[in-house]
Each structure stands twice: as structure tokens, then as C-alpha cells.
Image (cartoon, rainbow, N blue to C red):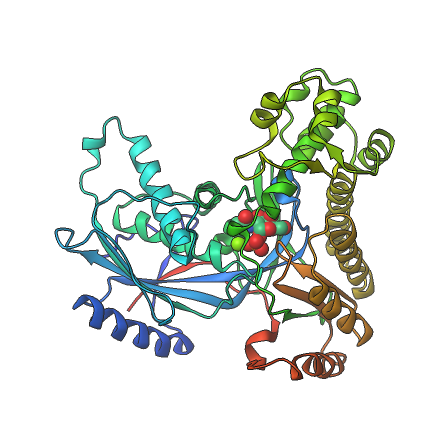
Length: 471
Ligand code: NG1
Ligand code: MG
């Protein structure tokens, strides 16, 4: 089967001939693994990058803009059509610690109690499968569901806040689209991928899938969500972003922390709207919905948060009283299975983080437009981390330690990146200041066991988005 020539221009990413010598060694290794497993050469490959978020943390799912960039770390996936009489789907990984996954039928099931790396790939496949089926009048119209063989390799550290999970979702969606000739734009595909990643049970936002698909080499992007739109961000001359991994792994799907924050924000959005006299308050699903409904700017919203909320955590009973609803209504309106049993909610702190972080992103955007000094960008990153640590409580002592080391050794700013509770920090520096910070960070890693320095501490440049490669 020839790869369909449908991914051109603004429609997904054009299929490129293999032109990257750095990739060719890895492609050969993956191809050999594929050949050994499946007795056939792959039809093609997808290279999907990870991302680092520079500012705008935990606000995409509240409807506010963020400023990430793709990085040079990526997953590489080889794919082909399988003989579905033997097996419908076979996924294998170059990393021997990851056992093969085999599915005998075309029914793709993702069990939220057993989330592993393949769940993310399956989410991407399933999202497009559902979309194709939805567009057809009957299932029979779906001419032929293809069986797939897939081999995965890559170098994005797992559970480190650099989006190896969304890279797998995006890879799955691209592969399923390609072999079933499902044509769409990169923006639409990003929306589908954000929805698909929810199959694993986390109520995340759309930042990761959007940047992974739409990134361009050499620039970070401001992503706005209502409507979805990307703009290039011009960062200060000489800015160097450095990533340091805390080595604390955070698997978002096996904990409720992430969904708890989403729930707290939603409850806060409704109480704010109700207290301010907005009658259809039940329709508020995000803090940005509420801002729009109350026709204020984010600075005014911060004042309202200050005015309406108390510091101490709210119990479920208090929330129900504030909203004049019962327990069951609260579950239906704001919670999900992972948060039904949540007993207390920190509303003031979470809402204050979201509105102040949104304000920082707006300022960041202004700085990009006016060519502000690197110090000013650094200040915003520092304030972002402090808010994530103190108000959003999604940092970790190791992340705080890394941030401190960076700041004390010449960084203009440093903050956790991604969801937090572990993972990486990103620091802003310049080439002349970099060596001092690097050597301080090397001391941090010197006492840790079995650390490959190059894979935990590295500088990043804005990389390209996902792309399909034909040999
Ligand atoms: P991580 O856990 O770093 O992949 C998550 C969300 C983002 C965003 C950030 C916090 C997903 C796929 N990703 O990223 O949408 O909310 O946390 O800013 O849910
Ligand atoms: Mg993720």
C-alpha cells in the first residue's frame, strides 16, 4: 500500500522523504526491529516531538492561552498494515522493558484502571476510529478497518512533564488517519487528539496535542483556545532554555491530583458566577467562561476571588450550600469518577493561580511584541513557579530545589513545566551564564545514582511539529 498523498500544506504535515541523517540511524534500528517482528518493512514512520511549556501552566483547561514549544526529543513510530486474520493490532517497543501489546479484534478498549504507555497510543487510534464512524451513516460504510503493526522508539523521558504521553496519542491518530485516508487539518486533528487523550481518564487541556502537531522549528507559539489559534512568539535575543529533570516520576493517569485541580477550578467558576449575580451560573464550566460572563478583565477577576472566597478549604456541604444544590447535583455538574470522593476543595488558591497565571501570559505576549528585556521574561517565569508551588500546590520539593539552584546560579527565571508534582523544570538563561548554572546542576546530579547527565540536563531549541517520513 502506498502512503496516501493527503497530508500536504496546512493539511497535517507533508510527507517528507528521509532527509535527516541524525534520524536515519534510528530509523534503521527501528526498521530492523519491525522486520524481525512482522516479517515486512514498514509503510512509513512518524516522528512526534515532546514539548516544554514556557509559561501558562494549568490554565489551558480553564480556557486561557499558553506558550509552549516543541523540543528536539521525540518518539519515532514505524507502522504497517497487518494480516488481521492473525491479529488486528500489534504494538511493540524497542525498549525491552515494555512488553508487546496485541489485540485480536478491531474493538479498541482502554481500561482506566490499567493505564500504561500503550493506552496513549490506543487513545489516538480510537479517537480517529470513532470520528470516522461518526461521519458515516452506518458502520458498514466504513469500508475496511485495517489491521495495524506498530513499532515504537524514542527519547522523550516518560512521566517527566515533557508530553511523551500526548506524543503517543498524536502518533496513534496520525497513523490511523493515514491508513484509513481520513483527511483533516492540523488544528482539527489537535482538537480530536485532546478529546482522545481523555480516554485515559484525565481531564486535560489541549496545549500538548496542539503544539506537538503545529510547532515550527525556531519559534515558540502562543496558543489561544477560544477559538483555537496559534501565533509565533518572539523571545528575547540570546535566550537559552534549559531543562533539568527532577527524576521524580509523576504518572498523572494513576493519581487523582490533576482531575482534582480541574474540579476545584470548575466549582470556583460556578460559585464566582453565582455570587456575582450571574443567573445561568450552572452553564459555567471554566474560569474563563465566568470572566466572559461577568465582563471583567483578569485583574478584576482576581479582586472578585479575593472578595468572594475564604482561605480555608471548602467542604462538599459548604459548596452545596453556596450553590443551593444537592450532593448529586454537584457530582453531575463539576465532578468525575476520580473526584466523587473528594471531601475538601481549595477554591480561592486555585482560582487566584489561574487568573494570575493568565495575566502573566498576557504580559508575556506583550513582552514578545514589544521586545522586552530577558530579565522581565525571567520575572514572569519565577512568579509562575511561586504560584504553582504555593497556590496550586503542584510542585515537589525536588522541583523547588532545582528551581532554587537555577535562580542562584544565573538563571533569569526558572519554573516547573507541565503538570508538575514531579518531572522537569525549565530555566531561562543566556550562553554566557549557562556554564555556571550547568555546573551547579551537575553537582545536584552528582549524588544521584545511575544518572546519564545528557538525558536529564539539556538545553532546548524550538523544534518542528509531528511529521510523517517515507523511506
Ligand atoms: P502533562 O501532564 O505535563 O502532560 C498536563 C496537560 C496539559 C496542561 C498541563 C499543565 C494533558 C494531555 N496535558 O500536561 O493540557 O494542562 O498539564 O499546564 O492533559
Ligand atoms: Mg502528558
